[in-house]
Image 1 (tube, helix red, strand yellow):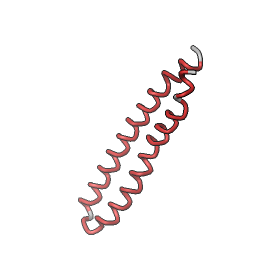
Image 2 (cartoon, helix red, strand yellow):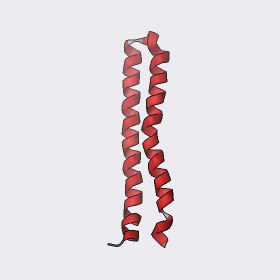
Image 3 (cartoon, helix red, strand yellow):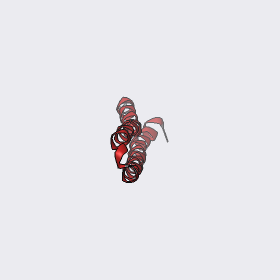
Image 4 (cartoon, helix red, strand yellow):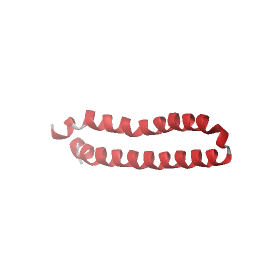
Length: 78
């Protein structure tokens, strides 16, 4: 298997795995936040702020994979 074939197989596979991992992470973040809000409704604003910050960090994985895919995709055809 040459370099272009490995990239052609690995890039879509990598971004798919990153998207699945990010989706699972975001679901767990939302679940934890909803449970925390259910237990302490008076802390909703603080919990939501923390949830948004952590969700942005979890989503960054998929964005990094997406950017890397676009940076390496021209090397497939050449």
